Image (cartoon, rainbow, N blue to C red; front, side):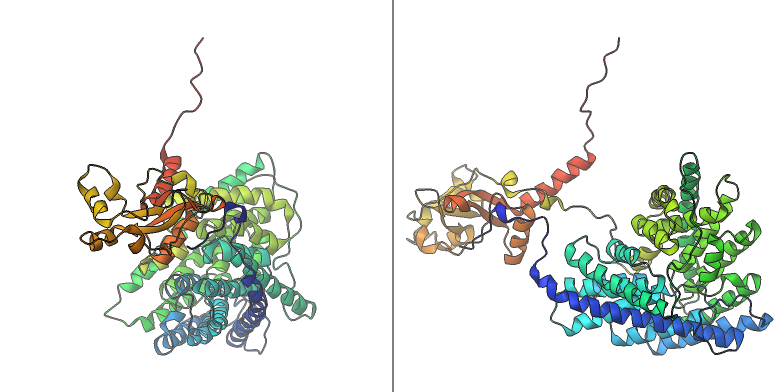
Length: 594
């Protein structure tokens, strides 16, 4: 009989010492993702400098300020053409902004990524962004870092769950290397990508992100990358009192804008899809590049990664007219660029659009610098679009190192997320996955099977057998008017109530015409459950052994039978949670009227 642990061995978490040997693997992935991130940023800088300013430099700059005039319109067009060619003849998966593709690898491919994609994605993204594409570098880095994390994991004998964690560790480390935000990158991986809150994932993702940031700080001290924080701003006094209503207002506005951003991107994608059959999708990035080039003539600040423009917004250096023009231009060229299927990330554009919205609303809010309202809008936009409020709060703080904004960020991000989830079924990240036929549930909660114990649902009214009983007498139970035949499994016990074995109904049907007795036919190798273990442990055991019923025995009483637990009881645990969520009751009586 398979022995089970009693409740005194139950722990808060399921992590085992096997997790330790994956720690050095996560650290290595953190180093690898950092190198990839820096190479991608250097490639973007190289293309931008050569094409827009005709100079050789690896300093990351915006196309804003170039003197090419109308000739600059051709640069994004050429970039879109090259990306289309890479997608058609290299890998179609280079199209898109990276994060949904990483989700898809996790959901349907066992967290495995091809080496070809890991190489072509950063090249296509560097060309797309370096030629003026209004995208962020973080999405491609998240996918590329995750791809190399997955490749390392595929070399090792790991489970799909372990490969998933290492993929996300690489993705988060890449994000940390770009922005210098290790805590936010860890939260991003846990909240959005790994689909669980467990030490086995949090530990490895956190260590990989910390490794990436440690390397970034070393390189910053050597003058090789921008020092932290990425967007340094003067420290502001904490927003409190009535000013928090301004933060809530920005949260509402940005929450509604999250719907607009999502609809704009997928509306543009649907518009391009109407060209199917008339124009191959390879040419769509070229058309998107044309829109980008023309948009650059309207406001060149909207081109490229735009970190310098975001910084200017947070410093309050852009006037109301400039913010409105930037908002409209960026939204248009960003949505058409992504809709056309080019390669680039969404986080930096979301930050820019959110900061613009916050600054626009902030011009009518008294008593607080416009730059601070832009910061609040930046965090609210990230929370509203990605539905990851904790990531948004920490991300905004790590980008600016401004503690005075934290309370207002909490209000704005919470409000933006609330509005977003009410007006939009799926986020800009999960919509693409859903369009490919896969649903992503973003609500994480404790499994009801983890909070329900076997003893709560054990059926104690059980028909038992003694080992000397003849089989043919059990077959007669079908017509005796009892419910004994409905058990499908009969525990066999001794005089002291201890479990000796089990007799399934299928064995009764096979032997009911001969002279067999129970003790000769019963199965002595029995998988059981203990009363003080969770229903999750029992359900996992059922699934592992392909069983629909388990005897429940008391280990401390020498294996005394307590009852049976069935697959139907697993559903009873779920119904218990549904009742707690949906059955409204008044627990306190109405106040008596005088």
